[in-house]
Length: 230
Ligand code: ATP
Image (cartoon, rainbow, N blue to C red):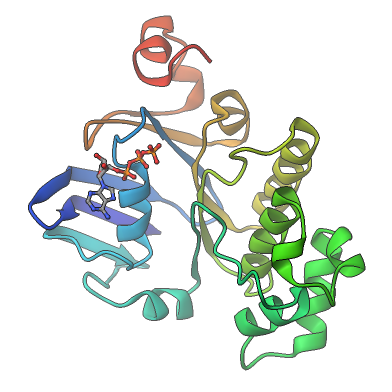
C-alpha cells in the first residue's frame, strides 16, 4: 500500500496541500480528480518523492519513506509519469528506454516497450522529439512499464491528444492495471478515469473533500462543482 497521511506541502511560502490523506492499495486503480490548481500534481510529486512534505507522512508497504528522494521510491516500485511526458527529445526512442532500464537487459526492455505500443518499434532509431505528441506519450508510458513498477503515478497522460490516441492509452492503462500494477490517475477525462477506477478522491483547494467508490459519485452537484461540465 502507498499511503499519504495528513500531508501538507507547498512551494516556498505557498501552501498547496492541506492535510491530504490518500491510500493506493496494491493492484488498485485510484483516480484523483479536481479543479485546475487543486493540488493534484503536487500530490503526485509528494507521492513519488519529488517534493518533500512540510508535514505528514509517506508510507510504502508500511515503511516510512517521508523525505526519501525519488530514486529511493523508484527502486521500491513507484514510477511517476509526469505532466508533459518527461521523455528526452534528443535521444532516440531506444536510448530513452535504455536510460530507464539502466542496469537491466536492454533488448528485453525494448521488446517489452514495443509489445505495449508497436509503433515504438517502427520509430526505435528516431529521436523521441521527432514523434507526434501521442507517440511521445506512449514512449513515456512504455518507459514506466519496462521497470515493472508496482505503482504508477500518471499525471494527465491523455492531455492534448487525439481521441483515437486517448483510446489506445486507456486500453494500455486497463491492461497495466489488469497485470496487477496499481495506478494513481490524475486525469481530465473524468468519465474514462471513473470507468477504470476502484476508488476516487476529489480534491479542491488543496484538500480532499470526497473519497469513495465511483458508484457513490453520482451526485450531479459534485460533478458540476468539481469537474466542470464533463
Ligand atoms: P492542474 O490541473 O492545473 O495541473 P493541479 O490540481 O495539478 O492543477 P498543482 O499543479 O498541484 O494543481 O498546483 C496547485 C497550486 O500550486 C496552484 O495554485 C499552482 O499555481 C501552485 N504551484 C504549482 N507548482 C508551483 C511551483 N513550482 N511554484 C509555486 N507554486 C506552484
